[in-house]
Length: 106
Image (cartoon, one colour):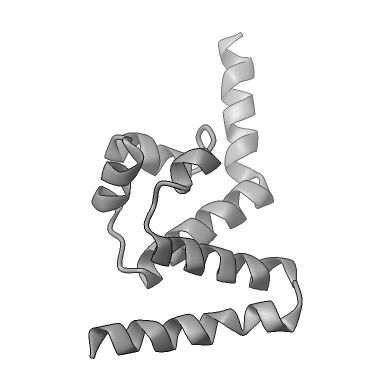
């Protein structure tokens, strides 16, 4: 039973969809200046638990991600548009978000 669990965890860690989602989450966090610690506070998770989820162990709950700030959500969805090749007008949301972010900092 234990070896089956280890094999399943190894499979999940190499699943391209899981890797793509984790990469998109990390990139959205970076672009929205959201640290791992802050993200964990918003979601009510320990840093170790969320780090494991980003590494492909377990799953990342959409309901927990929904607790993250709006700026993270915008980046996460803009990056998803790029990953899945959705219409170009949606992909153009990224530059608009960058401009808004620059204006906020000014």
